[in-house]
Image (cartoon, rainbow over the protein chains, first blue to last red):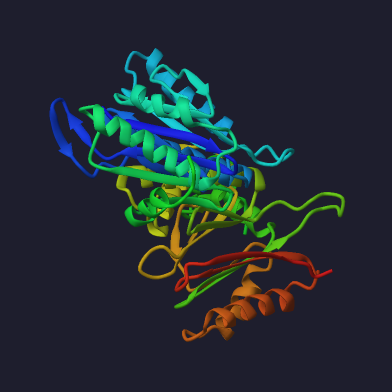
Length: 210
Length: 224
């Protein structure tokens, strides 16, 4: 009951989501937080049951921190996705799956090659797919309509934010369980940055062709 | 420290006739053979100096001050292998605390948990941890510095020395410590106490935790 998207651009990841929290046909909140920072340069978007999702996010934060203290380096994004997938799969096979689907985006960090931005989606059974752009939630098909037509692998940061905004907007217009505004986060090697409303508007209104 | 009437009572966790638990005293002896660690607290923060020793210059020395959480550090003296277990326990505990209460674990709570682990062995059996732990944190309303002995006893400290030559260093600290030291003074005092009493010119780790800025710096100081 949400639309979240993630996309990989030239030097990072953009994550975006709507703000509406739906409880069947009722809007429970118009200011729901759906994008979370779980590590220095790792972000997660959530869709589905809020309780399961937030619990998972807290668990991931703890696991990534323990990894950092043990190994003295931040966990690589592919390993982070694997760890999250294992948590999903464990409870799924245990018969009590988490009713949530997450996007997780960040950088590889394997010490040999330079860090590359990557994006994964993980479903309640632990199934993991890596892609350059992904949408989840009830409005995902509407968002995919925009992403499929406009995504290019060499997007700049501004272009990526504009495209993400446009995709969420499309879902807000036509999906009844998506609404109440857009949140966006940019992750690059300098860190994790949540854009506030005016910053987001400034980028969306700026003159970058898209 | 050992006489004939203790015979046999040191084999197990059991009182000797004069009311001591001799295995715990042996554990303290293991700590006294460990490398020296000095921690000093003031209003502005905490300084920890940890001697870095290895038995050959071809062997890299192990880490003596470990990060437990963002603003929480643990230093130890004693058996390195035992320390790995407690450091891991502490890190996991700090994260569980954060998930449970939504706030960072403070020194008091962590020390309470670790001292309980140490105490349990002295009552229900096993080998006591050959470790004295120093736990330091700056995320509460004031800097906190706590010491945990192998017995499980814990003390809040303004300044503490553990490991080899602990008594001499402690005497030095008692003589030179006063309550209005600033963080820089603490650093100088720790370095002076260390270099004046331990003449081996060993390298050391120096951790400075600033309470006001919440900045924590760790440097490796070479003496040779």
